[in-house]
Image (cartoon, rainbow, N blue to C red; front, side, top):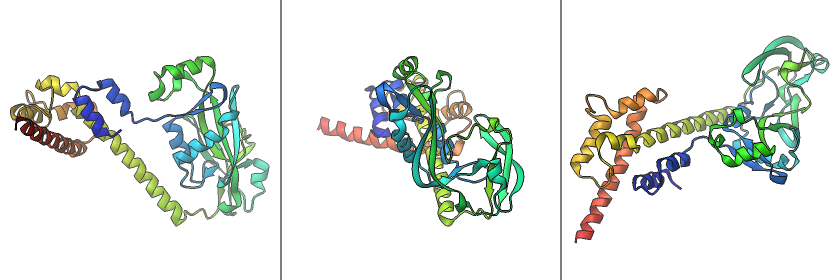
Length: 323
């Protein structure tokens, strides 16, 4: 269902404000079914965290370009195994990434091994661990193993779009709701970084250089993320422009069938003289510091064109009816 169609439905009173907002949620947690009623949640945060694991220096990494769909499909492959308290689940995927965490003995035995220190992310915390730089190339550490860490969901840390989901709440009560916490290439038996105690090390291969393919992939990943962020801002602005707040402050309940004086009143309030010198745009920008005035004006103009087109269509329909 297109965003424009949803907006038209809300404007026409066919769907409520809450239904409209629900349809435009920018967070999209995947719910993967398992056996005997089990469901596994994959949050946007975790997907982003996994996709960014593609540069050596902080542990095992995926090849550049691992996608959301690949992450979801990997969880689907192990879903039938998830039970009890959850745990580490292993898959085999040819050339999925690089195993860059080794026991300290194996790490020190690498060619031209040189010890150092790096920080690893562990949840919200950073943990300092031993690193071993080696002259061996990245290709020496290619891995076909991937480990997925899946545990029972904590109701205090659910993604926003499922926090009020009654079905998910019921699954948690039944002990059948799980969450993907992370995924990485290599050994699933490696403990958390805070538990290494000098027994493991992060490997930093020598001569690590990004290939053209990896560079292009990284650029496109950044571009796709930028598009998603811009789309979220656009939806936020459109949501405001179609909100009850505009209607209450202007007294205009329908933008498409009101007369020209009322339509001018709406435009003046949003992005003109405003009311008592305060415009709708200023109110919105004060509440949404992540949106710039330039971005607001851009999507306001797009919204304005859409409404003008709808008004023109409505006018033609009325003329045909009168005729």
